[in-house]
Length: 119
Length: 111
Image 1 (spheres, helix red, strand yellow):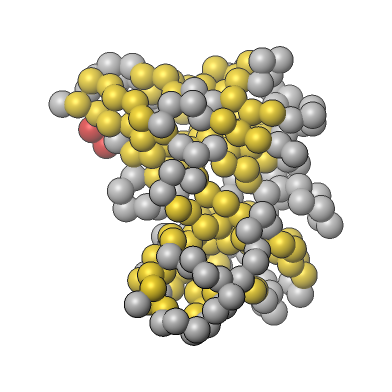
Image 2: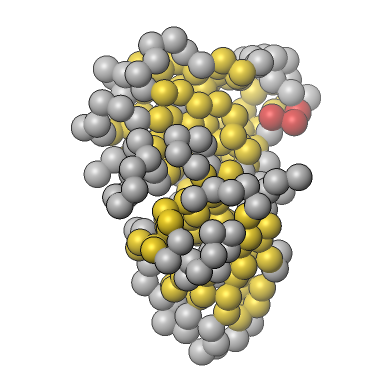
């Protein structure tokens, strides 16, 4: 079974600086998807960024980028120019390709990293 | 606007009572999911459904039941057999390889 590990329960960053959140996963599959979700105090789950395993290029979305190391099964999130609104819980998630009739397509979440941003 | 609607936002359950959490989506997504979130535990999958009239147990299905009679709706019943129902419940939906979209959640507490 696949597992996702986030080894940093809490992180802190100064406003305007850069922070990296770690995520490792375990799988025997070669094709899969990885995601980072943000959960602010409102508890809404917001997709931050996604990465397809077959793509070697790291995904980037504005100030958010990932360092995807497939061989090492590592998927870290870098937040540049941190803003107060980035303060939230961040969850790393793994998903197998979607196929009907099986468990593929379900998300497996890490336990999350609570990010604080200091003004 | 398309989205996922969960109701109610807050729900209280009495001892021995069954309660039902609503989840409706107008995104035309085939798959729908229910997650439970406890402090320090991340999200854990309760049930999921990939097509109408079919659903599968997730990792923590005991004490819960679901139905999927319509594509748009995937209600979750927390039965009296669930001895520790206090948690935040999130519903999600997805289509094909697209990421899951989440509702705003329901917080369930015991009276």
